[in-house]
Length: 344
Image (spheres, one colour):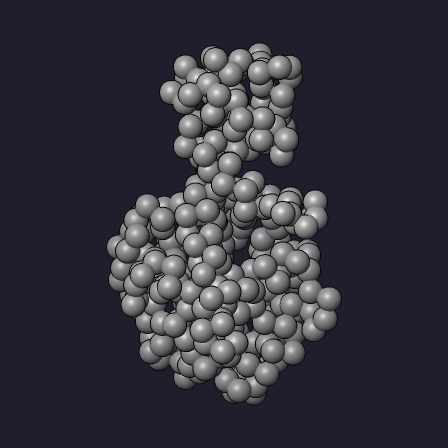
């Protein structure tokens, strides 16, 4: 018995049906046609049995993912074109194939660990979900199909969202700083932020540097005007005296003790004019938006890490020998912000 209609409105089923829709290329087929298609026509295109397909289509239409135009006839809805996009389809795969199993294991995982805090990335729901002893950071990049879906998902999540460069003027902050490394993207992945900086500030003087692990950088093509340096941020920073040391969504991947190590490793490299730019969500101390709480618990389940509140950020930086001199928010409702940080 289902105790209520609210409980019956199962979000898990929505993404499950969408995943089947992607596999059968239903969204692609409907999006390519301007006229409604019958179940029989779609069955020929997909190879699915007409009765099964009809039930799937009816469910997709009830969620608004496609449109039911008449008995056994369907056309694209306003959502269908989005679901036909390859990057969005990658996002569906990522959330169903990777995030889904992790969250499915979370209730049993926290119960088995007596509801203690999850702060070890080698002991999370990832290990339980995928029967691995490896931490998520090691396991995940070695799953090429899953990792490719994740990259597609990240592309989607940033589409149409303001960037930090719309709110933070690097040229103005640079002042008279010249002829040195100007921007170091610490743990910068595939170089998206270095590219964005070059596009937003093409005349920025000084070197732009991308740092990450050898494994990540092996997949990065040559980027004109960007120096690529292998670096482990758990070791002392090797680039000295740069103006900006930029960390985007690095610290939310790690519990406090590891985050302190990352931050402390920057301090000896800082020059008198250097600034650390921390680009992260800052959760309010109360009444946090549901999207932010969802991300927070996902980080906990997958990596033993967290999104931090305003108070937690100040506490973390204090423990690292640093202080916030300014906060520049640039999105709502997640309150993604640039924290401008210097040594105490």
